[in-house]
Figure 1 (tube, rainbow, N blue to C red):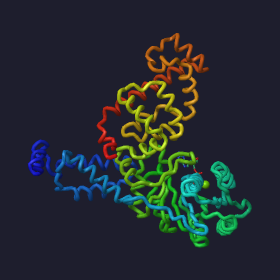
Figure 2 (cartoon, rainbow, N blue to C red):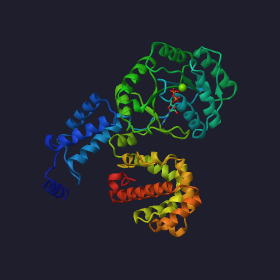
Figure 3 (spheres, rainbow, N blue to C red):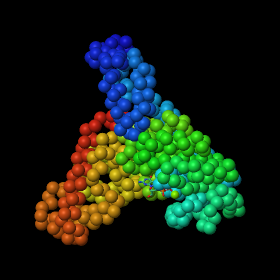
Figure 4 (spheres, rainbow, N blue to C red):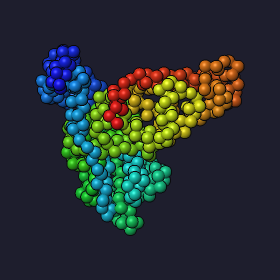
Length: 435
Ligand code: GDP
Ligand code: MG
């Protein structure tokens, strides 16, 4: 029977095997997706050529087109290439030492604090942050401010211009204060430079870190490869941290770097808030790179915050296109807990670009809440009845202008349209079918 079905599919589709012909367009699409996602062009070409060779002649046995099968092959290859499964951070020692290196502005200081927060809250460790950027006095203050925010001590020696000494003293300090992990935030330069490299290398040999994490701004795209290579040649780092994934970037740097230096990506950081650090999941990054949207992360984030029951009710309403302003208001609190709403929307396939220009900043919430508060339940359920008289009353009650009210209503309409659009998408394509 299976065989009969198989040949039936072959007949229907007329493309039972992956051939040079039926795959050429797909290969091109995939390569373009990779380059769009900031994957180094040479790497993208090598990668797709290899995939093509592997895919050629494979039988298409299920109800998918060769193109779809090809995407799956590519995704699986991407996942394998970027590390297969997650890679744990080595944080055992007395104290464990984690050295942070990277260019200036890559996000080292921000990441150091996020990592301290993560180790403290998620792993129950007692971290000590070490300010070893000896060139910019402001760098010490920056780390102190962040340390205070997350309740983690910061070790610094403002007068000392010797990063190696500071690091060594920090280790002693950690022992005497019962801190079991120290995170050393180092100085960076705008470009790879000998003095910086020597300094970090010296710190490395002095304190023998358990982990050396190379921090790289994912938005630097193609350049990231060369920087990663230079740092790796010199430091032989243990892992990579990709920052600023909240931007437009689709994370192709992850692939290029892994391909070039063959070191695991351990964390991804997306935002300036202290809790926006995530362990790196190759599977999700592969989806992101291929433009399938990071649905898994989205679903997990939402699940962590949403009451299951409420979520179900909400989903029903969205499916029936009955999501109204009362629901919206109810969700605002939840959404605020989930982080930046734009980040979240951006993870939905096809929506990222649509929300780029819409202002849904966190600050906007306050005004929105005031506006919804000024509406009657009837108006919340059915914004269409809002005429000029009602609008004037609402805007006045909320202490907002007419423009602000109209602007918000327009945004709400856009959001509803987006939901309608998503409703029309087959679940499988959104990656939800697998769960
Ligand atoms: P350093 O010079 O390597 O220590 O970099 P910083 O930690 O000082 O970060 C440089 C700038 O990038 C700062 O303005 C940070 O607030 C910002 N930044 C760091 N990480 C992220 C991130 O993940 N997302 C965004 N949007 N900005 C970030
Ligand atoms: Mg810094």
